[in-house]
Length: 395
Image (cartoon, rainbow, N blue to C red):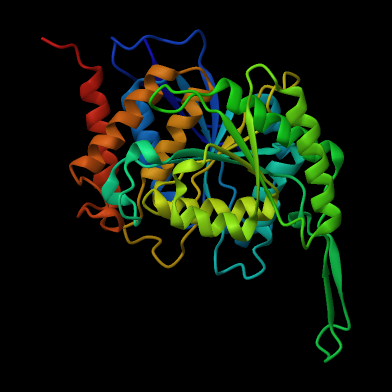
């Protein structure tokens, strides 16, 4: 029988509680171990709702909770315990993360060391952010239907300007100089572009039609050195993909932003660097109902040497201004959980969750940001109950 085992803080011995799912849901071959890190702000509100929905789906998971975040950092100045990242990679099949960032830690050192640490030290180089419109009412653009908006942004996740390389000279004086380095390696560029083509070739759209085009986005007319590397590698990798034939396209990031809000219907798979991917995906989230609807995965495609298959996090961040008010949209976290289940091979459970979220949007059983009147917990409970009903035998 599928089960969801809850375990406590991953830093200490805990008791285990077995929660039984519905008997008519097929079990996967083995229980998957999931590290759950709610983090800060609304992460601590939306992740419990994602877990509630996973439980309703009957997914065979064992959850271990970690208290990494601002509260722990303020208590003992620990961001990541010794062997923390190694343990995540070795002992868990996936990581479900809420959000990081807290105004009580102005430097955000804990957020940087935990989140960027997972991405870089675990080499989760591919950030995958699907952009899918569930209902036309959620899109601010006129005439855009769900069939028109189904693309994915694949963002390089370990290089670029996010490596925090550089420095400040003559700080606090009129002659102050700040240098932020943009690092792009051939290895890093080649593997993310190759993954974008692999993704395009092997993943269909929601309606079952094939994906046909990879668009590479840069700013090579201004960032000439990095841009030249991306341009050359893109052409080299594209030449290797002749069966099936995948169309290629290039756009500068400013032109792409304009086209995304003008008419996003032509997009399929977009691949770009770390910073541009961060910006583009927040813009794209606005097309699908806002940051509260956006899911993402951080992956190392094809890795077999470690157990962990990836880190999954909603896009919205910790949103301290609305934290603790029971108004945060939990659907981004719930859809992220569905994305995690699909990546772990639990396709039936993932599809039930996605269908329930779609029905919630249609019936406006949502939080206020997308037109409903429910609180965070109520919206999560509604989706969980819908999933639970889908598991019930039909009489």
